[in-house]
Image (tube, rainbow, N blue to C red; front, side):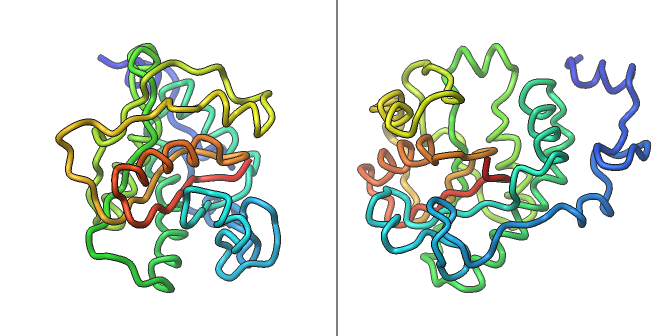
Length: 229
């Protein structure tokens, strides 16, 4: 039996927003969470159509697009913490609702190749073994169910453990992630990848993963996270 199942038996589910029993995040609280600042570049906050990367940031990034569902609202901060560090995987469903809403808006306004797949940012193998799961993969599967897109979880591999990114500058983060990802041999590379993670601050992790995917032949790379930190 998993730790999350044991904990759910000891501590009944309650909404992170209002305390209602029986749900992790109720629909009313989910609806009240502020969404992304549409019209601002997610990296530099310059005016940009659809809240996507501005032209200047696109030139500096391996990502073609960078999207997030919401800002680091207190409820979102707590939800991501519980998902990532406490094994509260039931929170992936309401968080995927936020991801799906953002992604649908994007897909309605952009013409993309039909061959689209969701690729979660991988963890190093022993980190995933220690945690018991990869939070990005859990979110990817929940998102895939909502938007009816395949999840390719084995495409990217993290080759080594990295120092925590939390207190590093953007330059230090990029150096920390240099050549850390690879594409597994024998894998079919989709034309368009939705590169999924839980949160970004400088987008260094997404950028490093996107660079690897680009070298492997992916045409269009869309970074997508629940929140911007």
